[in-house]
Length: 79
Image (cartoon, rainbow, N blue to C red; front, side, top):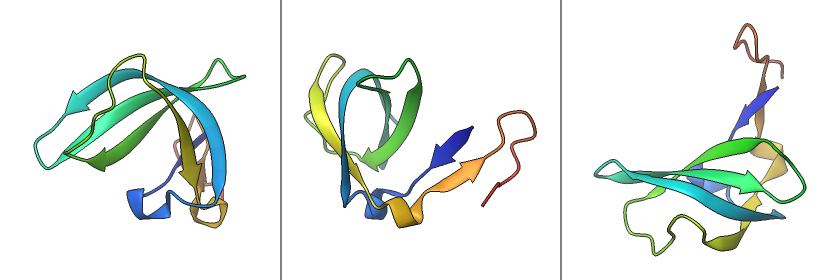
């Protein structure tokens, strides 16, 4: 299943990760991130100013209470 979180929710749980790709969009930047121990990738939306680049390693932190789960096939919210 898919999940999403807002930049303001990036606190609490810490997940070791690696940046796969960076996509600047003007006011914000999308990061395609690979989480350690998983073959899945997630997309994180962050502010425009970042020193992260493809290959950068960092700890992704998020507030697990703010995670939204979605069914991969229907894209409907699960929770």
